[in-house]
Image 1: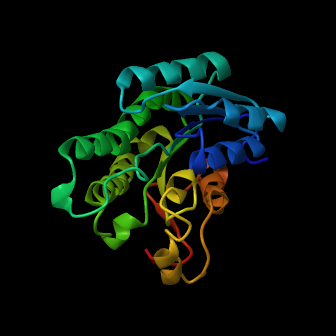
Image 2: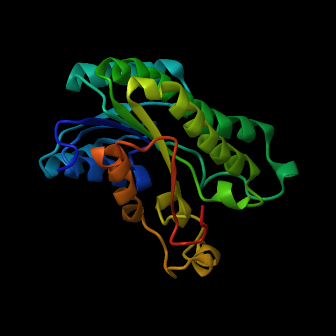
Amino acid sequence: MKLQGKVAIVTGAARGIGRAFAERLAEEGASVVVADVLDGQDTVKAIESQGGQALALRVDVSKAEDTEAAVKSTIERFGRIDVLVNNAGLFANLTRGSFVDIPLAEWDLTMSVNLRGLFLCSRAVYPYMKDQGEGSIINISSGTALKGTPNLLHYVTSKGGVISFTRALAKEIGESGIRVNGIAPGITRSEGMLNWGENADAGTVASRVFKRSMVPDDLTGALIFLASDDSRMMTGQLLVVDGGAVFH
């Protein structure tokens, strides 16, 4: 177990990729906080059924009071914070099409969750990681930011911002022993994406070296690497996990 005795917060962990992250972190020995606007009890039950420890918290990452309360609750329950996975984000329900047709409110909401959320969560955990002299912040970007994918400008822009956020924060807080890295997944068959239909990822699969769909478990190995001491000399880096659609 690479994370025995560690404590991890995973945002957006009630379902999909976030749930896969939370369950894998627990398998590696971490106590996990499932932070989501949705009910995370199913994720907690799955972890506890395997002998792990987990806590579900209702958190809107775009609200400072929610992120600060979540961190406080984590410290009260587990006593420390070693890993933050900034996974929560808007994607599947966003308007697809010309940028001129994106509703302004949707643009603002996307930036609020996908970028402001990273800032607020990272700011909330920083004092505790600094006091510990170590920590790992893992930000989830997207391969779309490396392709310049059209017809989802608000999403692609926000995920490009995640990459810049990761690199700048890594330089800023590295002296405190805190690593900041990112993962850029290819399109992944989670619950939200499947709402688009069974063949929604056909074009992406065709562009990959490995001609198959991605599932959330395909991303968990990279996550554990970045969360654990295996990556202790890595910071400011982006791991692209997309089956070879983009070489970065």
